[in-house]
Image (cartoon, rainbow, N blue to C red; front, side, top):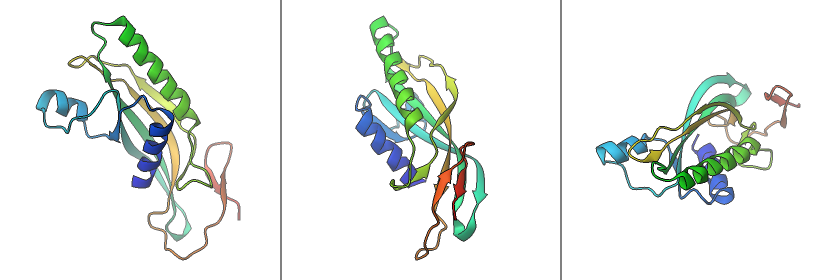
Length: 167
């Protein structure tokens, strides 16, 4: 799943440079603000978590993996600033707009369907850190168990967002 993370991270860094930190999720906000044990990061930040919902095994070790991709935001607190609050809302709207259109296609190093938003958890103000959580669903094609040296079949998405072979 590392290649999927790296692909998403690169796209966020490229298209949404407002985010100063993009990392894998490891409960950084609580560790930073409570335990003081987390490596420092710059705000605004987004932390990415992957949760596998279903795995569909294909031939030759190829798998289609239904994933929840959860984006944990760490935005500067707006406890004392309505202007800061509006700026954070605009940033998360821009993120949502972009991420809905992101997908890995045939010419990309990873293949996955467009992200479908399924949950938005509104922020709680934690030690003056605004931390909304956006959850999306996608299907990612994993070649992790694939045996090298074979020719891959071509594939495309059907109307249900499933990856289908076109052999």
